[in-house]
Length: 264
Image (cartoon, rainbow, N blue to C red; front, side, top):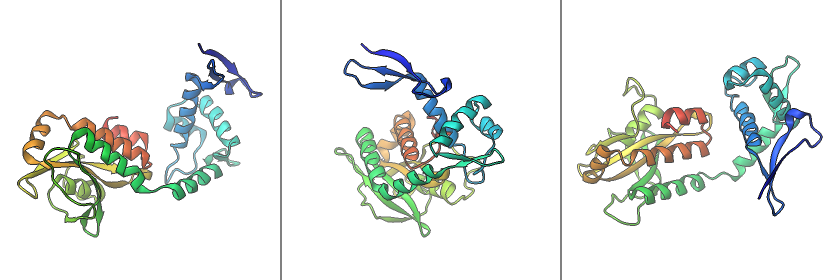
């Protein structure tokens, strides 16, 4: 049985956080505390290129929170070094954000994020999952995972192919290169069959990273006969969109963009 109580810990009342204490003595943050943390982190997400310095009013408008709530949360973030407040009253990101960013850069390896996502997607869908990037006017298969069973299209990571009319190339051309091949962002995932090889087909969705910048095309490929049936049923749509959303978030894309692009 867990006991719930409020710990003030020497801080004003609006900083109180509920903890649940388990019978083994471990503390667990209550729902109110989780919500407060999420709100504070969402305020940090309001800072973007071109909006490096923000007032209380703009933060309130961008976050949808009341000014009083924003003020209290920003005070906490300021004390912890995550934001700084200028004499004008405007806020900007603090040294702790830089420290964590540098720490992340030192520890981050793209393969450790992308490859597990591809293997999980291939295992779930039983189709080949790939991560394609733009490279000198072509598309490069940077990472790839094959399913453990079934007929599949085999291709090695490192393969370079032209930017053609396949769904993979269309994603790179539209989101990566800004080519006006669509009047508006198309429904995802994109699908083509026989665009490069009459026997193969592919689904493709964009992946985004820090600053909501395009990173790559996440693809599922296989025999055209099988994937055409999957295209009609839509059975692979949600698994691929969820994988792209999760990967984009891990690479630094904003929650708002992921919700808008992938519906998650």
